[in-house]
Structures are given as structure tokens and as C-alpha cells.
Image 1 (tube, one colour):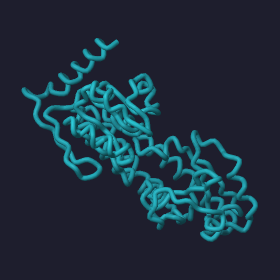
Image 2 (tube, one colour; image 1 turned 180 degrees about the vertical axis):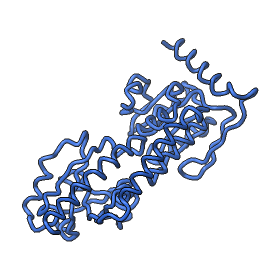
Image 3 (cartoon, rainbow, N blue to C red; image 1 turned 60 degrees about the horizontal axis):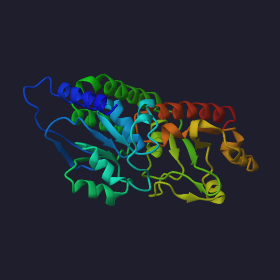
Image 4 (cartoon, rainbow, N blue to C red; image 1 turned 135 degrees about the vertical axis):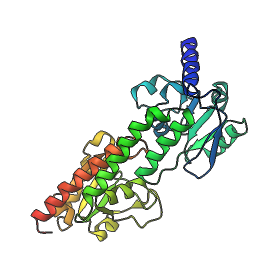
Length: 300
């Protein structure tokens, strides 16, 4: 197994340089604005976040991935890769032993340990998407670092076309005030820095807590009622409807309840800033279309 992976990695590296006589430096700016420079396209990549794993595969660099963080479960091929830690701690020794020429992470993966990896001279690309378009940029930049830009170009173009279509289709629609709920006890929502707030805008919605400068603020029932949301969306894994969502029926005067606008969206898509986030945005936009129709029917 190790021999086959080594051969695959070598073939990947050679293919990455096939269009030039010598592998030249490749450089991009990451999500934080830092410049990441490699002497040659990355042939051994370690991913330190599940969404980063998805980004790397979308960039066409799946064959170069030699280690992932726990819970990297998409695409399916990633589930068989060696784990190099979890959200609580990285296995620095194992990561170094894998001899990566690129590590892909994000600001929430134990910064002190990521800094430790830099002391070994390992280049680090940090994703920090603030919009769906930033996610697409991450795919494009990672493809550049992996030498797979040509192969990834059609997928990148398709993602950009999807975003453009969504933005055009929602232009001028009636704005819907949305409360996005995460859990019940305690009850969290999403604030200004969260990608979901931006996704709601793309869909012609507005996050009722979108002015709060916290990614996941804690809220209570009274605060939600005061915003008079016109739709309530529950983000759950695989869009399973939680019992607590229908608890809002106790307040029939809330526009969202009066119109029957209590919906579920898939957190597996929307809570990871990876390529499937666009699927989640499309799902959310379709949901808000239903909410608009319901509001119009009720004369709200």
C-alpha cells in the first residue's frame, strides 16, 4: 500500500511538471493575504480541516493528499486516508513524518501547533473564506499550488457560473428577514462574520442577527421574537427536521410562524466553507423562494 502511494505521488509530481522543462516556483496569496511559495507543485499535501480536504480534491489534487484531520469524510476517498489529529490536537510527529510539501488549514485549527509546523519549514496555506466566491478562489489557488490548474479550470468556471446565475436570479426579489437557528438549548445563530450571512444576501434574504460581530452568537427566545423574522431556518445534518423547530408554533403572531415558514437546510453543506457550500446556497435560495410565496399568500 505504501509503495503504491509513493509511486502515485511520484507520478503526480511528474505530471504536474510535465508542461515545463524544469519545475519553477509557484506562488499564491492565501485567505489571510499571506504569500505561499513552493519551489515546485505540491506532491504531498496534508489537510488540517475537513473543508480543506474537500477544497483540495475539488482542485484536482486528491492524489497528492497523504494525511487529513479526523472527520474528513468527503469525498468518500478521503475516509481511507491517514488521520493526523483532530480538532483538539494535531499529531505533529506524524505530520512531519509524512514529509508534506504543503499543509492546508484554516484559522481555527490550533494556531500554536500550526505555527510549530512552520518551524519545520513546511509551507502552510490558510483558507479563510468570507464569501462563496472566496471558496472558489481557494479551489483555484490550491490548483495552482498543486500544478493542477488546467485540470481544475472547468470546475472552477462552472462554480463561478453557478454563483453568477444565483446572484442574477435573486436581484430585485422581495427581501426576507431570516432567523438561522443552530440548536435549541443553548440556542445559537450566525452573525456578521459567518458565510451563511453572506449566502442569505445572495438569496435575497437578510440575517436578523447579521449586524452582530460574532460568528456564532448565543441568543434567546425573547431576542428572536423582537426581530420578527419572516422565515426561520434550522441548520441540521442532512436537513433532518428537529423537534425544537416546531416549538416556534407557540408564537403564532411571528410572521414566520403565521406564514408557515419553518424550514430545515443541510448543515453538512452550509457549515463547511468548501465546494459543496454552493449546493447549500442553491438549497437555501430555493427555500427562501418558498418563503416568499408563503408570505405573499398570507398578504405579509
